[in-house]
Every structure is written in C-alpha cells, then in structure tokens.
Image (tube, rainbow, N blue to C red; front, side):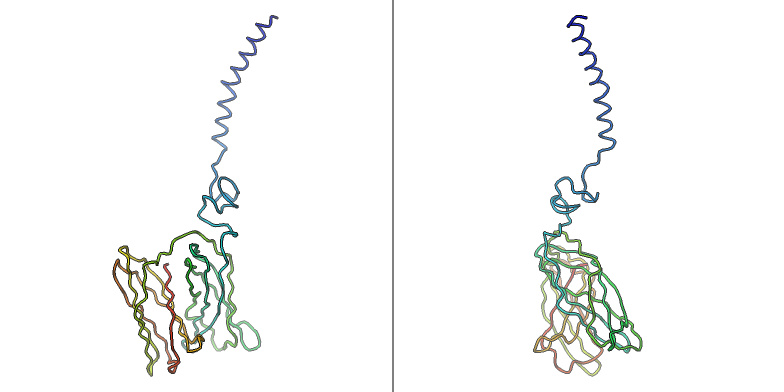
Length: 252
C-alpha cells in the first residue's frame, strides 16, 4: 500500500474521531460536570476552604476571632420563674452570624442540674449582645450557682455590614417604685431607610459595674429619620443601686 493511501486512511480515521468522539465527550462533560458552588461540600473554585472563603459568603475558621463569654446570670422574675442571660462579645468588625445555637444549665447547691434549656442568638458585627432565655420555669428548686453557658455549634460567620449603623441611643430614663423598676430608652434612626425589627437588651449596673439586672424588649422597627421608645420593666426595686445601664440593640 502506498504511503499516500496510508495517509488518506489516517486522515479518514482522524475525521471519524473528531466527528464521533468529540461530541460524545462534550455531551458527557455537560451531563456530569457540576460547576463549583459554596454548598457542595468540596474545596473547589475560588474557595479558600470547604465551602468557605473566596467567593463564598461563609467565612473560613481562620478568617475570624471566636466570640467571647463575659458572664452568665439568672434573675428571678416570679416564684420559680427566671430569666437567664449571658453577655457575649463579638470582636469581629465586619463579621456576624445568625441562629447560633446555645444552651444554659442551672445547678442547685449540690451540683445537680435543675434545668437545661436551649435557644439561638444573633451575633451582630462588632457588637456586644446577650444570649437571652426568658421565663424559664424551674419549680421548687433554687439555683445556687451562675448558669453554665455553652454554644452547641460553632457560628457560621458571614461578612456583613452593621445593619444598625444609623441607630443612635438617646435619653435613658430609669425609675424605681414600690411595685418595681422601669426604664424608658429613646432610639433614633439617623438614616433615611427604615431600620428592620430589632431586639433590644439592657443590662443594669451598680457603681462597681456589677450586674444588677437585665431585660429585653422587641420593637417592630424604626422609620427613616424617626424615633421610638423601648420600654423595660422589672418586678422589684434595686434599692437605688442602679448607676448605669448598657443598651444592646440587635437587628433580627
């Protein structure tokens, strides 16, 4: 067979390969290939870790500082009914997390748990806040130590701006009477856009910055360039010991 005939056969075979194999390969590629996403459980695309960093909204563990627990307290609001709170700092300037699960445990004088209750919280960017559990019933038992507070899963941090950057805390009018204590806090929105619904926590301190009480109220939001009053009440008096209060608003 001449070399010309061999070359022609090779050319025919090459054409067949191109016409048949290439389309089949392209079809298989489009059928089985899945573009990288931030939810596929793989480190691919521009990610810095598994489904985190790079183009993903979720941040990798190395990109943030962990939240810090300052204290945990309980406060009796009625016989056998307590509010529980833990003061949490978020040291990250532009990083927040929502629906972070936690639990708190109260113990009696011999170390037996009298209640173990759970909740979720928001960690706003670069703001301190409370993990708050209201009206926890424990019956006849009395707690004897500060509550144990633990996050039950790590926060899934995302990079976000502070949604309350335009919120200003104004006048704080605290008063005590025979029937209890109250606080009225003025909150102003200095922006033109409305502020979404928010939870507002408050901590009461004595002259030595010891925690005397805490509470929470829920607001429907604040209109642009508007203001609202956040009310708080306690069923008892603090006997003139309240010297200052810290207001901790959180967008929900």
